[in-house]
Image (cartoon, rainbow, N blue to C red; front, top):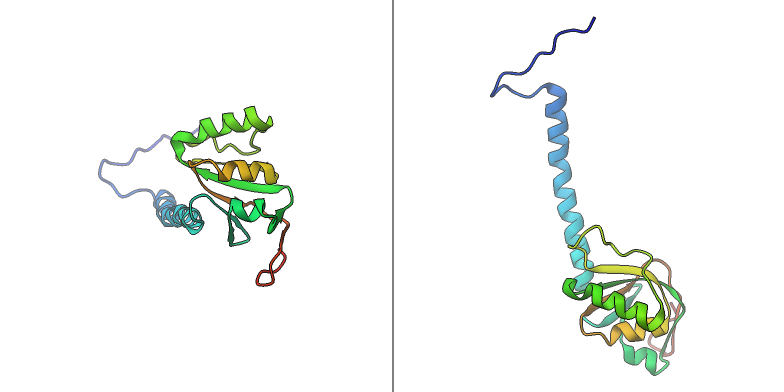
Length: 151
């Protein structure tokens, strides 16, 4: 035989376990905000139209001049949200390329990720709506200049 259900009075303090869960949820919200700010900081760290590899900034000119050689690797592309679909379609048409991660679950995440070669990077660096490209994990690159070391 089950015990009768007891409903709390309106305006009554929450049940102790419920209060603890609510307090725990309140402590998680600042972490979510910090995470979002960190992501925004990463985007802001790389100037628009620039390629960031392990924190160092490069341009299309660096690749075209052969000063920088980048092996195919995993990259994240941050773009203007209204242009994301158009950029992805142009990558599909031009290279038969589709992202491994499209971040389609959120319109607030104007980014995509996948394996890209120098030809993909050069094309994306030429697209004005691309704000930044960053390595997503270990990427090997060779920099030909005495002041820079190999990555």
